[in-house]
Length: 301
Ligand code: PLP
Image (cartoon, rainbow, N blue to C red; front, side, top):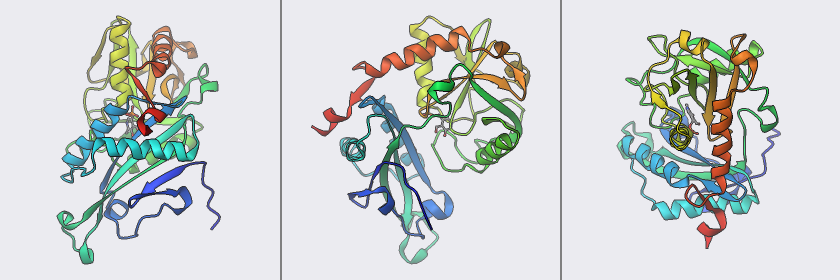
């Protein structure tokens, strides 16, 4: 098989390895059962953005899965920074993962397994490329239900992506860029790798439950407060989505990204709105400030 790897570097089983050599055993429950959690942070111009928030969410996720991460936070930070440095990347997508690991003699009891931690850095990836910002995302509103929180807690960042991947495939087949999923009450939830925000005459709002509590979502709350823009969490109906003045998606993979079309209907006449623009601008400005970012070199020294 001719596998092609992006520029990058990994850390696995206690050492740094080339991406092509970073492999896990076939019996790891992370692979066989999606019994794993992960987090993704990005590096922009040599600086991690809100790394402590990502690390905090990762540790909480491992606790909720009853396999609390045994590594110290400082050690993990150094591993992440080491992956970026060894990959030679200025702008990077950096992922930390903990799987349930392998259990002795393949016993079914998850408590018997020894969790496995790994990490890698690859070039920064965008859900909406920078050069397509003015065009915005053209999304498909699907009738696929996001896995309900009573089944899988969405605040644990997880690999239960079959609903999201189905949404993506439906979207690509119809010529859309990506998809939005709904919940059992037909309110909107999130999409493959991003949270959603609506803007109306009262302010900015985002679904209050049934979604990953994205770090970019949290960042938008912090930015909106600084900009004196009213912001809240509440259920969003399909009608509210369709009649929104502005819509945007948020993700570590691209930041604040305008949505200008939903299932063929233009939002804000197909143009990027002013609120989206203001939040997007401040978001990227924060990437060079000391309170919000930390240099890769600093962590390694
Ligand atoms: N929702 C889901 C399902 C995700 O997988 C992600 C990120 O990968 C997000 C939302 C956005 O989260 P963040 O802003 O922390 O990247």
